[in-house]
Every structure is written in C-alpha cells, then in structure tokens.
Amino acid sequence: FNYVGNRHNLNIIILHLAKLGEAWAADASEEILDYMIRKHTVDNRLTPNLETLNGCINSWAYCSAARAEGILEKLTTLQKEEGLLTHLAPDTVSYNTVIKAYANEANTKRAESILEIMEDLYESTGDANFKPDSISYGSVLNAFAKASHDPSAPNKAEEILMKMMKSESTKVNTWCFNSVLDAHASKGAGNRAFRLLKVMEDASLRDENITPDTYSYNILLKALAVSKEKGHRVVTRKGKSHAGEIAVERALQTLDKMENEESKIAKPDAISYNTVILAIANHGPKGASNIALSVLKRMEERFESGDNSVKPTSET
Image (tube, rainbow, N blue to C red; front, side, top):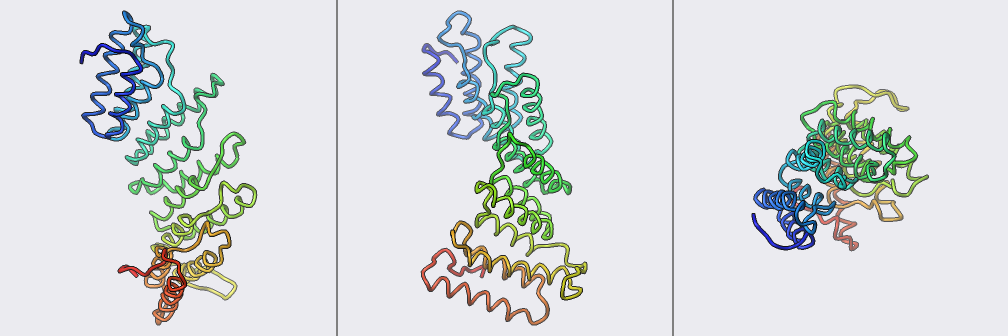
C-alpha cells in the first residue's frame, strides 16, 4: 500500500471499507493503519488517531472478533515495545465494538473478558473513556443469549443483569432485560422467564427505560411455549397442576395483558398469537383445541378491526 495524502482522507477510506463488512475490506483497512504507523514518524499528517483505530476495529468486527481485538493488541504492542502512538488510547466505543463482535459469535468468555478489562481500567484510572456503559453490559448479555451451547448461560446472564441493577452508575434498559429473557427462552426455562418479566414490570414503575415491549412479552411467550419444565407438578391455589398447564395459563394471561396494554408499547402482534397457540398445542390438556380456536378468533377479530400486525399467517 502506498498513498500520498493525510489522515482525514485515509480515515474516510477506512470508514467506507468498514461499511462493506467483508474480510478483504477489513484487511485493506488494517493495511492502511499499518501504512500510517510506518509513515507517521516522518509525516505527522499521517499519525493515526482514535477515529483510525475505531474504524479498523469496526472493519474486523463484522467478520472476525479476534482480528478486531487484534487491533487493540497491535496498539498495546507498539506502545510497550516501540514507544509509538503513546498519545492514543482506546475508548468505550473501541471496547464495545469488540464485545459486540464476540457477542455475535456467541463467545461469552471473550466478551466477558473484554468487559472485565474495561472495568479494571476504569477502576484503576478513573478515566471515563474506559467506563463500561449499558451497551457494554448489554452486549455481554446478548452473547449469553446466543450461547445455546452453554447450559449455564441464562444464569450467568441474569447474574450480570442483577449486578447492573444494583449499580448506581450503570443504566439498565429494556434491551438488557430482553437479552436475558432470550437466554432463558433458548433453554425452555418458562418459569425463570416469567419471574424475570415480573421483575422487569416492577422495575419499569421506577424507570420507564425498562418498560417491557412487544418483544419482551413475545420472548416470554416463546419460553412458555417451548418450556421443558412440563414434567413436574406446580402447587397453585387451585391445587396441584402440571407445569405445562401452568405454562398455558400464563401464556393466556400474558396475551390478555398485551391486549389491554393502553400505551401500545407492548401490544400483541401475529407472533404473540401464534406463540400462544403453540403453547396450547405443546402443553394444553386434552381437548385444548377449543382454547386454541378461541385464541385464533381473538386474533381474527383484532385483524378485522384494523390491526394489520395480527394478520393470521401460514404458521397460525
């Protein structure tokens, strides 16, 4: 690579390469960075800055989390071994981009490790540029939600969420809760998802940023529909009931709540009705077809009243 220009122009090229989301484009971005590193000692117009660094990290984030982290490691090596670019430090965006890249690969170990690096740096320096934010934690939660290979992922995700709730400096939002709900749903943990949604509803009374939305309730419905807890008995006010029956009852109650949602933030859509019908099919007692038909009728009536989001589908 050989280019006569300045940092501004090269950063623009890196930005456009990052948008392509291809490995060859990320390679080209890193080549530009390496060129700037080689040349900046004789031409300070080519000195890489934070925009250069984050652009290269973002280029690799679309196709290789390890290579994205490698850009951070490259900077550390240059600073420690060659005394170069000592003015340059990663920021929250840098680390968050790497965490999100690992989350997309469901690599919980590395995502959590990068978060711990941020926490340690912030604790030791007090520099706000290293302070983890809701995106940092939310991305780690998302990694656990996608980690279908890890049976402990939902519990770990919920532990992190509860840690966030207790922290005065970390803002929790709907996305954070939804990620943990996703993790429970992926394991068929209907009861855990139901309890967490209740925590979310209670928290939303104090913080509207945690208000459950349609996706929140749909994840709960999915967790109930695919619940693997159906072989046990649950004690209720009516006596002992199979967990599967409880799952159906809770799914119907959740649909009622969504239909009566005044703010429309969590109004039901076609997925909501289809998932309740699936819960009935999977866990309903004998003769549950009438219950499923009544849900279908509610869906059709809502659609006929003008709500196109609940139009019955082939899945229905």
